Amino acid sequence: MSQLTGQLTLSFDSDETEISVIREVEVIRDRDCTIDTPILHGYRPEPIYGKGVELYPTVPGRTDTPHMMKYYLNNLDPLETYDYFFVLFSGGKDSVASVLNLLELGVPRDKIILLHHDIDGGSEKKMDWPATKAYCIAFAAAFGLEIRFSFREGGFWGEVYRYGSKQPVQFQDADGSMKRIEPQAWARSQELKEMMHRAELEDNMELFKKYDEELRSYGYRFKFPAKKADLSARYCSGVLKIEVGSVAIAHQVDTQKDCKIMVLSGERRGESTNRSNYNMMELHRTHAPTRNKRIVHHFRNVIDFSEKDVWEVLKRNRVVPHACYLVGWGRASCACCIFSSPSHFAGIKELLPAYYENIRQSEIELQFTLDNNKSIDEFVGNAKSCVVHSEKKAIYQLLTGDIKAEDIILPNGVEWTYPAGAFRQGTGGPC
Image (cartoon, rainbow, N blue to C red; front, top):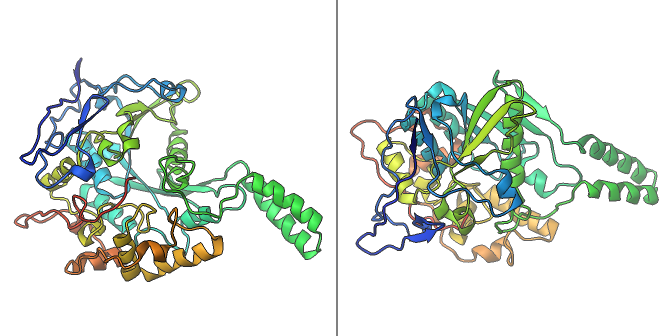
């Protein structure tokens, strides 16, 4: 049986772009990446599916904490030994590159399942782009891949105003139906809210305070997530993405014993200091070899890629990225991501004024600002909108979600060009 590790070659472009060394792997930070940055990892890989090739990380997995020891994984087995490949698919350029890399490695399309977590969770009050879900559906159709959806009920705004237990998670099962998983304290939280309402009607404030105290013990937010790497403070990623994904994966494979799953995600070291220390491969949190005879490995297959490497993968496959990149955004996170720059929020104010007004009004109601120190109006100030008005089709798609499979791959003869938001043109903060 052969094995494959990442090949690292130290190189500099003509402008001597800094290539920092993180845990002994060369990483080009996104802030330093330009259109002239050399390609290090973004070349077309050799197809290895079916060839008995074990995969080893470019950097050995961390074992410096009990948590890292628990999830340590020395290597991945040959790709053909896995029953399914679940790709956590946001529709952003990195998750797109992750899927394309998997296909280029030779993994059969019928083994790949895209999992998209809907940040808005069915809420009428929105945080994410109207185009995101439509783009994901169109991408899956263009490449002949299955896609499933999941969300936490109430979405982002439900979590901002959370009073009591976390909301239930819904996920799409293999048969296309939606399943619903309630947190352990959900039923009690709902009961307490009804009891509080009755106590209020009866003007029994002693009982009201008693129920209120118990309800708050299950959770109480009434504030925006913080601009921090700590996921307990930046709870939007943990509660609306990571936890939702784990619930969806665990329950979808619980009915399948003796299964072997690979979960892939598109985090990259160059995005932030925090992500620079992620492992390329590890045991997934749904790994349960003893209880359910379920093996689940997590592979961050583009972790060493620079932004230039990622765009190279999309360019080679002639993939049109999410419309937000074309319009001027540098990242395809939530439309109103807390890490957005003033120019981004000026763009939101221009294109999606209702989204902007939701934040303004919530800051007043919560007495808590989205930014750490300023109100949204103070944060934006006189910043110029990042919107590239010449991208009329992309703006239309961004606001309507009118995206079809034929919009995803450029026709032959049409030149692929870098989007306006590439290489920090749509300036934004770290993930």
